[in-house]
Length: 358
Image 1 (cartoon, helix red, strand yellow):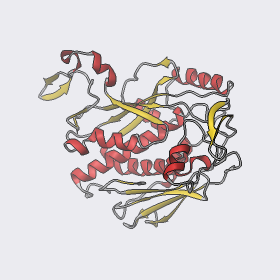
Image 2: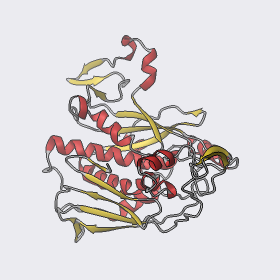
Image 3: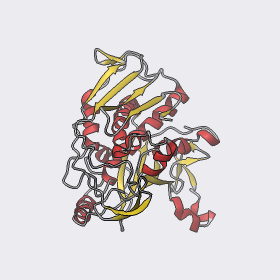
């Protein structure tokens, strides 16, 4: 299902090559002023804007058709529409399965009735409305001084050190068009451009921080903060893994190495490190949330690949002709940031109700 959430339920709709895509956000309190220019700026950071991005150039301007009047929310469901204006569907064939995409399982599940063009409802195109949701969540959370930002931790075979999770760094990354600080940014761009020239693609790892959360957000077991966050993050197309804190490296550590010691200084309880990534038992600890996501290489590449023609029932070699990113990692960062803000808003309302939102 393309619906999610309980305090702030959302419904995502549309397909990559249909007329429009959009999102409906339920239960926003009435009377909240929204800065629509900042929503547009967030959408601009997600869309292609460089020669190492997809050649599909959607303007991603949006229209609000319900739930907003005289610059403020009305209490009705807020529905945002974004038109698909730069669509080229002639490169897609229903009978040819593109390796690495949803083509095959969607074809079987929906008995050939699915819109296969650009992966239809499974396309990364659907992340644009999610970015709008995230910026609205960000604006509601501003009075809580909560910040989210992501940085490239690994690009293909090149690894980078974690950055210092200061408010300055995190805010800089959130408002940047590229998820890395110099000199890593230049090195990443050069790597992507070199891969583009080979008609191949690469993936990577993004590291995300959430700052200034209160202690105790989350519920035991099935609604832990990290389990809820993982659910929404893993819903983003192209993401194949998530880990928190020291992640999989914890498997090679002793308990004496992995645990985060606590200390009291001037009557203030602090942790000496953050190997657990800011959660314990599904509850936030007050430390920065730190998690990593694995983004696979873009599956649509301009290199011959082995696949099948389902109409002819035979094996073929096929080269995908289309407009695709040689590396989707930079454009995934704004989506991770957006859904992180949404997850925080969901839990803040569950904990404190709506009264704090102004």
